[in-house]
Image (cartoon, rainbow, N blue to C red):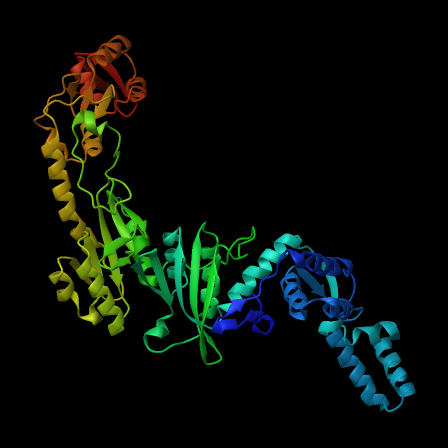
Amino acid sequence: MLTKDLLRVSRAGGGFHPQFAGREHRPLAARVIGTYQGHVGQSRADLQSALDDLEADAPDFKLVRGFAKLLEREATFETRAAVPPERARRIAFEAAETVGVVTEDEREAALAHAADRLDAAPDDLAASLYADLDERQVLAAFESRWDPDELLAQYNLSLAQTALFDATELRVRSSDPRAVVSSVKRLRLMYEIRKTDAGREVVVTGPDALFRATRRYGTRFARLLRTVAKTDEWRVVATVDDYGTERELRLTNDDPVRVPGTEPLATVSFDSDVEADFATRFSSLDLDWDLVREPEPLEAGARVMIPDFAFVWSPANDGGADDEADGTAKTDTKAGDADDRFRVFFEIMGFWTPEYVEKKLSQLDATDERLLVAVDESLGVGEEIAARDHRAIPYSGTIRVKDVRDALRRYEDDLVAANAAALPDDLSPDADAVTLADLAAAHGVSEDALAEKSFPDHVRVGRTLVRPALLETLADEIEDGMAFSSVESLLDDHGVDDASALLSELGYAVEWEGLGGGTVRER
């Protein structure tokens, strides 16, 4: 971003239009880059003098200063002095007090005295006295990431960002609204999504906007532009406070605003510590629910809302069987789901302003999605949420994972029961050997749901289903007198982990020899 004194805008027609650099300014960008490259090893004062000469020939001096402002971040300046400047000044001033400097000769004498104390030449000492001043620092290195074209792109992006410094509200349309909303949340801005004839529009403000118009979030709006400009199609309309006059700034993907190949500024991942803490603790549990951050938008009347999380039903080994062939029930899904897996959305209400609470309640009123709402007890709206057929989970400080787990369990029970009811009487797993636990998990049911089912292609051996052909193979490979450890390894290769039950099925028992292991014997 540039500083505000380098902003180039037109206010024609009452608007607020950035004056972007074009192809005609490419030679000037190249000259500014060359000026930096040609002054490596020289002082900042010499570099600035050369830049001043460029300004005199440029169509707008702010262009040169804007290019230079961006390139200075790629430059390394350092103080070069025979004697550390602060030490040189202290010793020189002490010598001057002793000599009593009034004339040039007395100055030379003081410097000679100080140089003698520092074991340095008087000229070196004189050069070191103020070597740490900005204008005397030396350009030690310059390694620009940008060629002239990329410098123009970076300048135009920075100019557009600077134009947003005094914005009080942004209205954004993008081909990737989820990326925009994700960035909005990371930047801790307020937003709502409106449905318009032209599509969804993200309206972005700062929290203070609930109380008054404010320009304090301009730098965050500027950072948001990086995300917006990286999408294929986008449009930004900003309300700008131009020294007390309200103006409208419009930017689209047709403007020369793009993000050069550099990484955006890193920002926080969650809206609040409450969200981050909950996500960490929930994800550490071994549950049949995947936690998805910022899921797909939900219809909420004339507006759209993006919940903080979604819980996606994902039983262990889900997808390990052919659902249609085996008759597994497909869980019902909402129109907004990104896939056909069952999900429950999760919203955290922790902001306390009445306007915020009222907006959230109106959104909850307008959606019929499955929704859990963790609500700060201080808001006192738990009953109102429950009245809207959504499950309210009160919290104070942190969200209790157990409360969320209990709320999800009622959905689990329904899902398991629905899947169990849809199971056919005969099941034919693809695997030669599969445990009942794994088969139940693949179908999203409990093991008890398999108790009355038949398996025409398998033999039930303990808690494992085994094809008869595999039993015959194992019967040929297992012999009387084999070490039990060898048999376990053999069975493991074939996917059988219940060695005792299988050996019993084949007519063997294990003869244990103290702690030294066991031997397989025919019964």
